[in-house]
Length: 229
Ligand SMILES: [Ca+2]
Image (cartoon, rainbow, N blue to C red; front, side, top):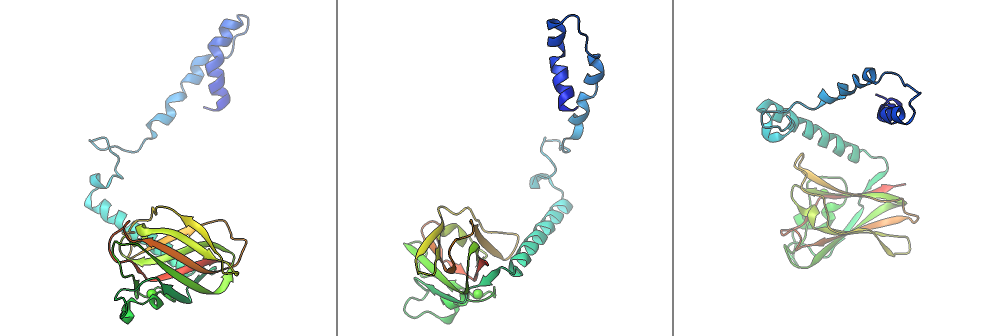
């Protein structure tokens, strides 16, 4: 039923009572079309929930949904990896490193440089204070997005601030707050992504702040992208 018909239907009794001499077209013909949209609802189970509820899915449906989620994750990650406007960190330094004064190579901030490779930086505190990871990029760009790749885990929940450094060395806050990015169980990594209006200045470094008490445990990061042109 189009809007005009609906309005005409609603107004019909009023018009009839207000103006006895005018008789509009017979209402019952229009009314008959109304229920057509009703039966289009999703099929419901005996308990009243729809078939997309994981608890109500058959094993085959669940397996299919898991494969679809894995495919979606793979497509997302492939798009990020091949993004022509993205560059990987060229240098990295951190406020702390697991092992303190004598960290092993397997925990150094330098492991965040370059493409995702499974090698990570690990901080030195599980639940005390704050840590930061600063990443330098070879080509300064007007940035629109940053991406931080962490191994499986909930590290992304501890991130509280993202800052961008301009060519004068000044740090500008691109985002701060409580992170809503949780462990992405569709794949082996979680991508922490923050998008913002294109910066008016050239960005050459990005700094992430971790509040260690928000999510207890050591914080690990594999790689980081800066997006812009
Ligand atoms: Ca790495």
